[in-house]
Image 1 (cartoon, one colour):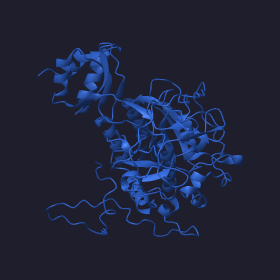
Image 2: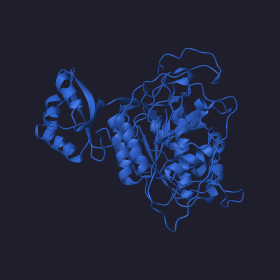
Image 3: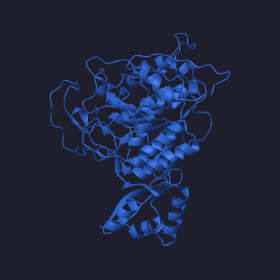
Image 4: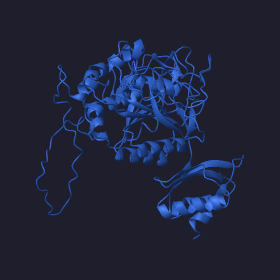
Amino acid sequence: MPKVEKLLLSCSSARPSTHTTRKLIGFKRQDHYEKCVRQLESFGIKPLKSIHRGRVIACHIDSRRGDKLKKLSHHPDIRYVEPDYKVHAHGFLSEGRTRIGSRPGITSGTGSDKSKSRKSSAPYVSRKKLRLRTNKAFIHSDSGNNQPQIPSNIPWNVKHVQAPRIWPTTRGSAAIGIIDTGIGKHPNLYVTGGINTMGGSSYADDNGHGTHVAGIASGLGKNGMIAGVAPRAKLYAVKALDANGAGYVSDLIKGIEWCIKKKIPVINMSLGLAGETSSALKEAVQRARKSGIIVVASAGNDGPFNEQGIDQPARYSDAIAVAASTRGGSIADYSSRGSGIDITAPGSCIKSTRPGGGYTMMSGTSMSSPHVAGGAALLKTLQPSLTPYAVKKRLRATAKKLSSYGTRSQGYGMVQFHTASGLTSNGSRGSGAGGDNEPVQVARAGRKTIKKQKVSLSAHSKRRGKSPFASKK
């Protein structure tokens, strides 16, 4: 059998053309991955992305060499060869329903599980462009201004998830990585740092989506400005989507790996890959969770009539999948339905920051996801030792069930951060959701004993007892 590096070289192309497609190649061993990277570079072919931790290469593959590609796919040193799929942002302007990215939404309906089938809208036609550009990335001066007093301008959506009730007890700050279109300059945002995974040098926002998401998660709320869920959180801008709100799976993976390296405890991804399965992205999210990172993702904007269910990465068991609700407490008509939704947060007509200053109204599960990311950062601030398992379990166990909706629409219900924090009315530590420990792995046979360790076993109802990271179907 030919060596894997020779097969890959024979399939690869140095530049894109009408005959090439973007592929992700996953290797079983680190030495084979490194050898292939060196081989390609020695022939002047620079991979689009090299994911060292995941042993993944993204490159242009010549579709005319189908026989070589087939051999490469079945080579014993290869885990998978898959397309480098496109991903899109999950938000749109509430006024005129101007879309961010290239995914259609649902424009009518009550959002009830029992509602009759309606046709989804055609792709949104832009009535106003959301391209407020900044020329370069920025970092606020570290003058302590990112530690505001309790904000006075608290929007309805932030109150809805009980975030303000936790603020008086929080000390310090946790970090949130916003993997999106970047974050634009705004007096109500404090950006600690960032990266552009698309090949550019700036992580400034050239679309507007990422800035809006960042404001929901962590608007400072100083001087009467609108507060986000976690005003003290440190924001990191990971620009993995372009000016049109689109990017590739490899851009996301690069951003996830950067967050793992930086030990950023919370990641928000208000974006999705619909109808396809990416092993590379799934493994990256799993690596993040195993590294102690809470991964929050939006469910998607395809409404109740999409047979494919919720989008990836929300669909993965290692992520927290978030559906969107309206101000009136209904599930939004555009919010994707399907198995795997964990919780719900406000997503309709959310006012938040836009690049360059000012505010705009946007809707989508893109807007619901950062509520949960901000809340996860609050919980980590209160209890830094909380694992992703514990956070997900708490959020699900303490969510407020919405009437008239099933689990395929709302998951466990509307997220309630104060209840999840376990704080009593006077701010002291209560019982919380309880049972934050990871599941105990019990061997089938053997005589090993655990000395001087307390092990607690508890029984749960059928619905509540399922592991938060059990496989989502």
